[in-house]
Length: 449
Image (cartoon, rainbow, N blue to C red; front, top):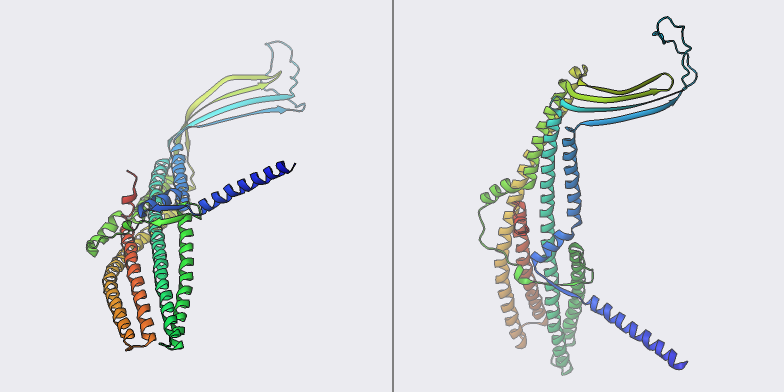
């Protein structure tokens, strides 16, 4: 009995060990991703793109529905009726000539079936222009989906760079904290030997505490950036993404501002989509004017009728051409045409506004990128200056020429300069990708070959 209990306890402990080990392994899962890999993952798992695809599917179905208006209509109907004892007065007398008048038939039920088919021959070109309008709108919806794809790419790049910046900040803060701890240890020895004042030791200890607090904030920012990135890429939330710094490169030579404007006007999906919507509006005007004209249709049908004891009709096939015209359209269609023209005017105005907005966006993105490149140059000099300043200040402190406060200020300035330089290089990547997005060409490098 004791051995059996011991065996069960041992198996439970073993199971618990493997479960815990699996959880630890899962929690420590690390995945190295380049920027391009991250973009591809986000494109595969983006909920925004799934919504865009649903809109594309809807527009495709609308186009199919418009085309189906050219197909024939086939309608079938039938009824079975119970009838009371009606009074039947036949104007055509039954029976042969000279015979006595027959008693009226007893009718208590009736049934009939009708099948009608019609094919539109002419409907004032409403069907044709309806298909044309639906086709333009379908193409515009696809371009909207491409624009959403551009947005997903840019958001992923920004999140990837933000993750890099937060991780770099943690690394620099950890490095600075080690130096601060070593400084506290050195100052403690000096204070114990009576070589420095207690106040100087407190100053370096206070700086150590401040760095620890800053490190906690930096680690929290890094964790939140990691969770945000994992959600965007469709990865488990506890995945640790290792940034590939080689993918954070950007060119320093770019075209002029006017070249980027022309590129944007040729490649921006929202401009092309608005142009297609204008064409759809033109087709809508023509379709509205089509109501001024009559409609012609080729029709045919079959009728079967059975009234027991009275009448049976079979093989009653009919066919012909039908004409339909609503005279009221002469005074009602004008308002519909006016509405269609007003919708076109709105689209034209929006198209002009979008064109101006694109130019503004390109100029802003271009200037931001140029600014980011200049910042890199300035911060690179600042790092050199801050490092040299700290070296000189430290030598002066060793020779009792400056105070502890001066030394700590120089250390903080050096750390801040390194952070600024690192962030400036990362921001330049985002600025360049944003320039590509505003020019409408960021999607080209991520199209599957």
